[in-house]
Structure formats: structure tokens, C-alpha cells
Amino acid sequence: HEYFLINGGGDLYVSAEKPMEFALEHPTEDGVGIGTTRIQQGALAVSSPYKRSWEHAGKTHHHLIDPQTGLPSESSVASSYVRAETALVADAVASIVLLRPELVESLKQRYNVQVILIDKSQL
Image 1 (tube, rainbow, N blue to C red):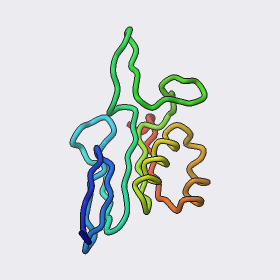
Image 2 (cartoon, rainbow, N blue to C red; image 1 turned 90 degrees about the vertical axis):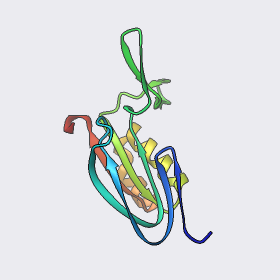
Image 3 (cartoon, rainbow, N blue to C red; image 1 turned 60 degrees about the vertical axis):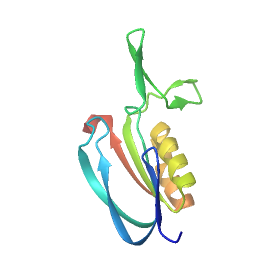
């Protein structure tokens, strides 16, 4: 098919005849938009420690593991939104910048991506 939309658990890959508009969801408030983006060809990936989290022994844990510690990341980033040409690059960069926000500029240049970071202090 020439035109399609693939939704892989909230990460998107789009090939459309004309741009499609998508809401960017608030990291902690389900169904609340904080902005929009329009995509005709390409991918959008979002990463956040809030969507896949659980309580254990009185502490909140999440699925984003810091490879340096082997523990859930303690990054100050609440959510990352990444637009890229491919879903693979969008997803990888969204996870990386959530764990290591200091890499945003180098990844933007290397992979030609657009990145929005929401810091926990902004919530």
C-alpha cells in the first residue's frame, strides 16, 4: 500500500497522501494533549517513565533501565517526543535522550531528528 499508518504501542510510522495531525499526550495525564504534530512521511516515538511503571516495596519503578546502573533511570526527563525518518531511529533516540538528555544536540545532528523534552520540573 502506498499510504498507511502503523501504530506500534503509541509510536507511529506514517505514509500519507497529505499530512496527518497527531496529539502529543501529557506524560502523566492520560488523554490530555500538550501539543500536536503533523506527519506526512516519517515516524513519531514517545518515551516516558510514567506509562509503564509499577510499585514494589513502597517504591515506584519503570521500564527504562539505565545501562550504567542496571536500575530504572533517574533522569529528570518526564517525556521525550522524537520525529524521525524511520520508526527505528525515532524509538531509539526517544529512549536514549530520556536516559541521557545531554546527548540531544549530537543525536539531532547525526540522525536528522526533531526532539522535544519535557522535564519533570515542568509538570
